[in-house]
Image 1 (cartoon, rainbow, N blue to C red):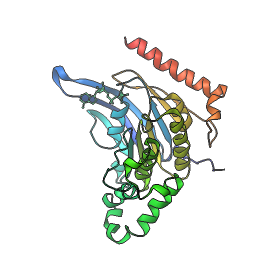
Image 2: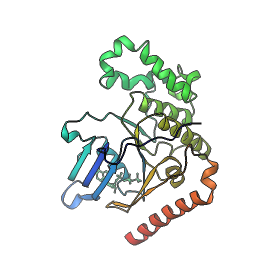
Image 3: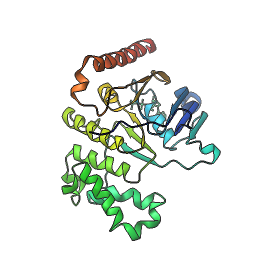
Length: 276
Ligand SMILES: Nc1ncnc2c1ncn2[C@@H]1O[C@H](COP(=O)(O)OP(=O)(O)OP(=O)(O)O)[C@@H](O)[C@H]1O
């Protein structure tokens, strides 16, 4: 049985904080307002799911958190970095596993250690030893150790996504950004991977931002679910999903869980109707 995670007290500077952040893509007649001023504060170790209608700006929030783009207005604070605190290390996984086809699964998983400081300075010395052991421990944990020397195409979609999660976590990121990571998988494989991700998260202090269209997935995995309005997006409701952990698939069929899903669904349907 795994232990319940302790989040840091709310007084600690959040790992990531959006302060009235807005995004408009393009300009002039072509301008698309993706996010209206939106605030969101995520403490270290939290697991937050973003749900909402298509095009409401969920992926835009992840891109901002990954520093792949800058907001048009507002500020984003990473671990109080504006005060000179440590930089935030980020891991990412998307719907497509993006494993490099010419590399073995183990080499794919180790890749961030070759690129991300401080690991990259130790790459030559440790890639055959400590880094390999680190990758193998994750592969073992996710049931992939017997496939470590295979190429990605030799694995099923679900196994590729397991490897993708290993690669996103190998460098011990502070922040894990997941954009529909299980969106292309069948229901049963997806549910298996929820269990794997929950376990990986419970063993670490990693903070997770998950974008998903699957409300059951959001309520199974997250501590908090942020429901967004249709574009231009903003957070309509930020609610706790405080089911005890570790959560099981059976729990998702219980009345209190179903009630949360129904409430989330109602909010999204209502906001879509209001936007028409
Ligand atoms: N580079 C871009 N240039 C112009 N418009 C963009 C760009 N990227 C996103 N958009 C628009 O901004 C809005 C928000 O996009 P975003 O991808 O964040 O939404 P989303 O909620 O993740 O959508 P989905 O659920 O369909 O993946 C959408 O209307 C999208 O078409």
